[in-house]
Amino acid sequence: MRNRILSIAFLLSPFISFSQVLFTYGNHKADAKDFVRAFTKNNEQPVANKQQLMQEYLDAYISSRLKIQQAYDLRFDTLPQVVSEVENLRAQIIENYMADPSAIDRLAKEAFTRSQKDIHVAHIYIADNGDTIAMNKKLSSVLAQLQKGTDFLSVAQQLSDDPAAKQNKGDLNYITVFTLPYEFENIVYNTAAGKYSKPYRSMAGYHIFKNLGERKALGKIKIQQILLAFPPNSNDAGKANVAKLADSLYKRIQAGENFGKLAAQFSNDNISSSAEGMVPEITVGQYDPSFEKIIWSLQDGTVSKPIASAYGYHIVKTISHTPIVTKANDSANNQDLKYKVTADDRWKSARDFIYTTVKTKAGLSKLYTSDAVLWALSDSLLEYKSAGIGRAMNLTSPLYKIGDSTLTVTDWLHYAQMNRFRTDRNGLKSYPVLMDEFVKNVLYQYYRQHLEEYNDDFRIQMSEFKDGNIFFEIMQQQVWNKAAVDSAALLSLFEKNKSQYDWKQSADAVLFYCADEATAKAIADKVKQKPADWRKIAEAMNDRVIIDSGRFEWPQIPGLDKKTPTPNLTTAPVVNTNDNTASFAHILKVYTASTPRTFEQAKGLVMNDYQQILEEKWINELKKKYPVTIDEKMFADISK
Image: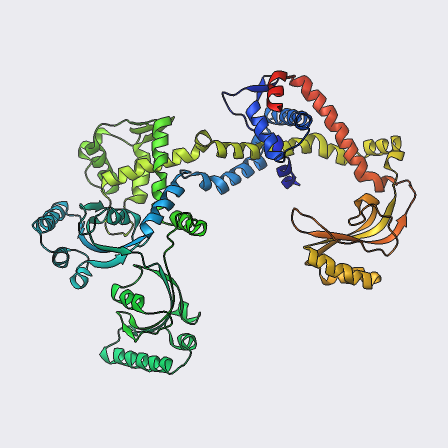
């Protein structure tokens, strides 16, 4: 029953500050903008009698605000089930509101622009091994070589700490958008062709990139692959055997044998072998440069000779090439880019607006004066070193104030203890880097905890949901439960108004509610052929149909269309345009005259009437408790 509350969400609008008051109720105010927003949301189609419809809506809206206000006054919002459901919803939807609304479009547009070209990249890496002096000395040596014109690839081969540079001279081949981590991609795409970048400091060390050249993006390629992997610890003889098998398979393919079947039988790539060697579409920069150079040179439908790599031998068949999308307004491509943006590490940059927003609105104040003192205290507690000057601070010393929250040394140490190691586990982060992360994390968590103050859409959705839940609870208490258990009142109401509950023209019938029109037509045809077997026919398709049998008044029978029913009539299926389900009826017996209902037969109708009586009485009491005053001029203005 709780889900029913969603259908009356139109009644439950939050308030927007600094707006025009439409009506007051007791000491409370209802805003005209909230009312218009709710009315518009639930009356999207133009209507001729808008003013009358809006008046009816206003009456219902006022009643709902009175009920909800009493629910708040009775602290229904603190009921455990309400608190739990509100917290659950908040957890479910909050991530949808935690990014800058414009960021996804901005990042997708940037990704599209970058996707139009591939860049040939070389890289020099200087590792941070904990010795800052040695690292900076090596950086100076690298820069000196580059500044006097020494070939970048030679410097990389000689001085780069990337182990692969000894062989590839730091040449990463071509990359495109999403190939590298976003922080590196930004550097590459902002470095002109033929130039090298300024040194970039990451947590792992320094990086220098060179743009060796650019080309129009190649797009994607679809391939099939047979991978014949070298066995672990294989010697030259073992590798030679793998090469012999690769040559044999290549000859069999050339002779006409099916590539996919051979891939399924022989390939050691467990994922692609189960799909007959089919590999997901490949973009530039995903694989070893020498491997990519060969596969991109193949024409569609051609098969490569065995390609040797560090892993084994590859035989590749090119299926198709897909050129890059060049139209900026291609909706399918834009949607794909947005998906990739949110799944990529660049999405973290979309959080930057959070830090600025909290600093601007809530404020961020640094409360300590000496980093050296804090680092010394941190060393003593995290590394068990002598505290030294760190004794000038303690665990309760304040570090930052954000809004109404004060962060202490204890908060910092908890974060530092859990996050001080680099993600590659290669040593510790420096305290300045860790403190920057700590402050950003605190700003992010503050924004998350106070999101209702920063995002109106989120606040409105949460407010509507909470109001809906307490509306349900108070309706349950004041109306629905009372009507359900007061048997004496129900019977008395029935006795006073017996004739009102008489059966009008009616019929004993079976109603069939089907998943779709095709199912309804199929079952209806079978029922027409064998009316006595309607139950067996329905049971045979119980996953596609629900039946309801009983006595129904003629207007309740689907497909009757004001016709006079006859026994054994099967009506034509009627399609529900909202969900494309379909229903029809099979008539068993017809009652053309009005006949009395028993109390049990009428109980549902009597209960509905009694609920209305209880609700009207309750609303009258609420209007005395919260007197309503409507600004008629305001209502006239918004009704135009």
